Image 1 (spheres, rainbow, N blue to C red):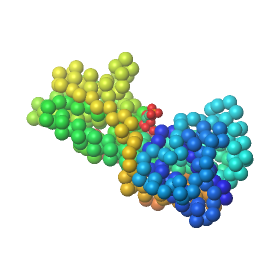
Image 2 (image 1 turned 120 degrees about the vertical axis):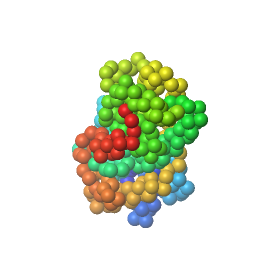
Image 3 (image 1 turned 135 degrees about the vertical axis):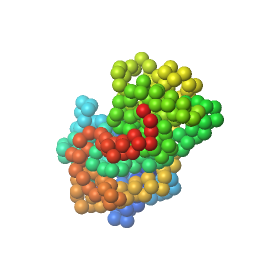
Image 4 (image 1 turned 90 degrees about the vertical axis):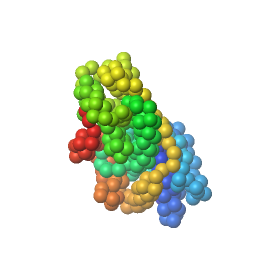
Amino acid sequence: MRIGVLTGGGDCPGLNAAIRAVVRVAASANDDIIGFHHGWRGVVDGAASPLTTAETKGILQRGGTILGTARYHPDEHEGGTRAVLATVEQAGLHALIVLGGDGTLGSAKRLADAGVSIVGIPKTIDNDVSGTKRCIGFDTAMATAAEAIDRVQTTGESHDQLMVVEVMGRTTGWLAVCAGIAAGADAICLPEKPTDLDELAKAIQRRHDAGSSSSIVVVAEGALFQGPNGSSEGSAGTMVSTGLAKRTGYETRLTVLGHIQRGGTPTAYDRLLATNFGVAAIEAVHSKAFGTMVSVVDEEVELVSLDDVAAGARQVPSTLLEVAGRLTVG
Ligand code: F6P
C-alpha cells in the first residue's frame, strides 16, 4: 500500500518515535510511506518525500518532528479539501496517517467524511483529545514541568518568596494539575475551576502564618478567575503573581515555562506509547479501519471513531481535581 503520514498542530516529544514505528512496520509489509511536510499544509501543496528506515534511523529519542508541523486546517480554506483530494489521487495514496491534537484531527474527521481514508494518532502535551486517555507528548511535558517546578521551589524557599509557575494548557489543566500534584504545589489555578484570588491570597497567608516562608502556585495558561478575567493584567501567570503580591505583600516571582515544556527528548513512556500507536495505526490501515483514531484505554491500544474527537476537549476528571484540592490551598 502507499500510505501518507503527517504531523500537524503544536509539536511534542514522541512524534518521531511514532513516525519511526509506522515506517518500520510498513517496511516489513512492503508498504511505501510518504511523509508530508508541515502537516495538512504539505498535503495541500503536495510537499512530500518518501520515508524509509534510513530516514528514520536514530530518531526514536529526538524531540519535535522530522516532518515539520503547522497549525493549518485545509477544510477552513477555500479549495483546501479539493487540494487534499487531488494530492491523495495524484500520489496514489491508499491511506493517510494523521498525528495531531483536536484541531488537526478535527480536520481529519471532516476529510474522512469527504472520502479520504484516514487513521488518526492523538498527540498533544495538553492531553485533552477526546476518545483517548493519553496523548503522545503529555508524559514528557509533565515530567519537564514537574522538574522545573521542583527547581523553582528550592530557590523560592531560599529567598522566602512566593513563586508562581505558568504552564501550558489553554482549555484544560491536565499539565497544571498533574505536574502540580507531582511537584507538591501549594495551589493550582485551572481552567476547570475559576480561582478566587482573594481566597487564594488568604489561604497562602494562613500557610505563612503557620510557619511556611515560601509557597508555590502552578497556573495553567488558560486558568479562569472569579470576577473580571481582566486581560489588561496580562497572562494568567501575571494575573496570579501581581494579584497575590498586591494582596499578600509577599515578594513574588513569576516563571513562564513556555516552549521549554514542549521540546526535548521524549520519556520512555512516550516512546512506548508512540511506538504502540504507530504499530496500531498501520494495522488499522491494513484492515481498512478508516475514519478511526488509535486510543489508549487501560494500557490497551484500541480504535475509536474519529467522531469521538468532535466531543471537544477532554476535561480533567473531577476525581483528579479532588486529589489536587486535598493537597493544595485556596
Ligand atoms: O500544543 C498545544 C500547546 O502547547 C498549548 O498548550 C499552547 O497554548 C500552545 O500549544 C502554544 O502554541 P504556539 O507555540 O503555537 O503559540
